[in-house]
Image 1 (tube, chains in turn orange, blue):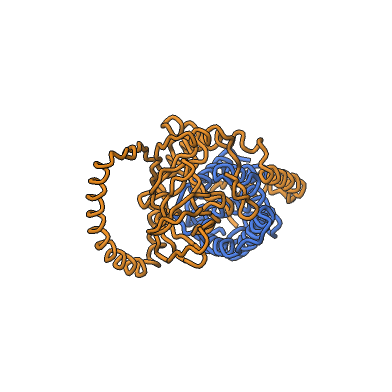
Image 2 (tube, rainbow over the protein chains, first blue to last red):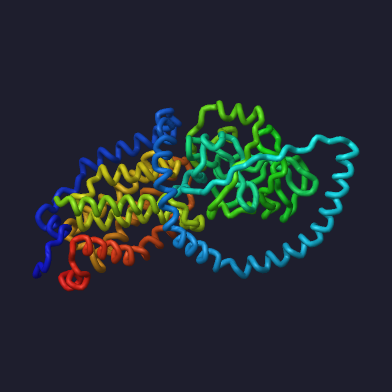
Length: 301
Length: 172
């Protein structure tokens, strides 16, 4: 084989190719890996220290890198959408028909509510301030359903704040660095959201399971829910504002809820500045590491 | 060991690491593909320039993915080390033979072992049997992507080394 020009890779391979497979190195690193996994599993404070700091260091690079990757992302989304286009059209036609009826009713109810509010001198809900941020990283493993956004404490974000996408509530801020924050999605195994279901406003807890559809738990006994029932935040506990759209019941038997937003395709999200004493409490509470699918206690976060 | 080869290896690894952590809007069952792309790039360099890709660098890359993706530390790090160990055990490793069908079969073996380790670790960490489908589907996509990725990395390495693509192909 004639060498036409020097090739750095070929030269290295021919003259310096290692014959050892590095069994000892692999054994040491495997032990290190297992040790770190155990530390993560037992939620050791060492694991938390520096995680956000390192993430913040990487965040500017991720933000810059997201720009040239936009066409790739658009292509991936288009391929994913192609498989569901026919179903989506049918669903949207049906939904549009129902919404026209609801629109007329909503206008009438809005007018009545304004009249009654004026009569009763009801204190109105405060207009929430918000900030919109870009999603710069998401989880690639089987454990957490979180995304990283390019706004943090410097922008006024605190742990516990509600995060919404264009289609409704998507999660809440888990931890906030100076210029980046991590958002726990409502599908995460650790997510617990107090909600109201259907027109009767049945109270329940929406529990994430790392699957695409979270599940309703703690519904009142003998309560009936039906597929298509709207699910909104209840505001119980004071951590989240009341009435944020979450999704609809997709399976009444199992209590599965299909979120309105495509949580695997988030690009921009808005963080609502909803300050309550509960939020302040959450901000003061030490952050906990993600615990995977099965063995998480409901009151973990 | 040339500085240029190290630079190319490390730069390509950095680029694919950033790509792996950037949201690509992939459907749930294929969510491990970006992390698997890192393994594919590592496999390429483990075959072509093993000295430029020591195990500690493989481990460190996995650790960065773990930190930024908020996963348990050591998960992807262990998975990558397992995959690259398989690559280095393959016959012809380190002699620039990671091409063609042999290279592809080698990657199939490395990816299969790596994702088997990923599944086992995830099950062990969760204390439950997790669905195998996302791991299997992601492995399938990666195996399909191996050929174009190898072509791109091959072209980059040849351009960086100042060798025309056609000449390199004839030598192969």
